[in-house]
Length: 519
Image (cartoon, rainbow, N blue to C red; front, side, top):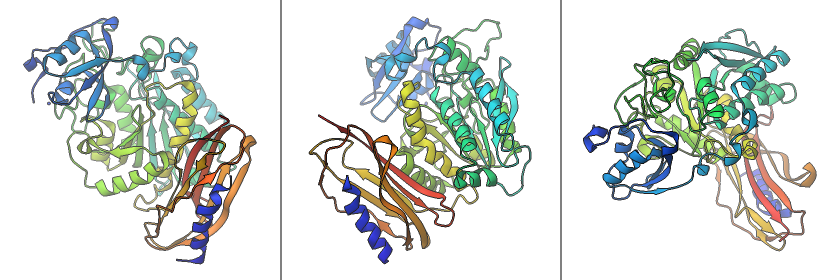
């Protein structure tokens, strides 16, 4: 071990603390129309019951999934049927998935409406026309333009040799937070282009496409009429009347790869929340994404959804792995070190099966390494959580831009953590650091600090260049206990960053938030 690594170890430990083939009708259940008041949120316990795949086959709206239980948004009729085939059910409150404070917010409050997305993207283009260009990539069912913005040093040109990366939000209407992260990303890239050489490099050497609102009609309807709306606004029976419990297509079941593979991963019933449409790419919103992807060779893509704090990878249509599974999971592991999300696919049991989904199509047809990010813990979190969800996912989202020139490159990783998150005077704090180099020997710069009230920083390691040997792994440090001195009450964070010493480009970063109270 080099002297510099020994120094880093010493500093990190001691100095840090200075401060389904069966159909629904086979069970006697056929979906039917219901009134708004007939629907509610329920928890469905799976222990000893029939397979959850039967719920998927029935087209019931599964809100949250884990191996022990599901949350479903279901009618009295659907719940009666689930009880009849052996599921134990308890009612819960819709406030678990939609923050009540957003009800009745004028213009959706801090959440972007379609008009606000349109205006803001064009304003970005106007203010940064050297690196940003807005494109109309298609029209929705109701005739709204589906806007994309390209961010690059030559945004009107296709530059050979520059890798393309795609970010998408709001396939599902009620997932308002999935619009915000793409919009934050747009502004982060253009706002930091002139003052951060790392961001300038990403913009100059990549072609970044961002589609914040794939399903604008559905989002508008969710924001103005009915928060729990999921699908687009297709009039399924062409009767000229929008019938909430019959109309609409699930845009994330309408892509062409393995479309309609079975009735578990999508539904043939127009009234179901996972209705896949009359044929693959029947929906103009999906056609817009298809045409954009066929015109650009995307290396990576992220489709933002909510919720679950997950990163999903193909396959979704079947319980199996892609030929690139190891690469997929290696990259996901790096991103998980940044946002602390769980990652995997249907085979891993962290998500139910889906077919006709965006990431299966992007990988299956084009070889794009596509991920789904399930953001946060609600469809519509409180407004004061929007910033935190962006900050938690910023580095992971940028990581794909960073490695798009060579997806198989693996950078050193760093992780800083504390034993808990809440402290008061006289408590002890235990701080640890993991530093790993899974690849070739490399030199890195290391920064470690904690935020102080007023925006100051208490530096522990600042611009220290360290040589990390191949497969170097410094983890599970010896824990030490330290008594906290008097501090001003407030929110604090430890930060640890690994950078390329020649460019100061961030290779990995980690944040450990903690709170000091005066009680």
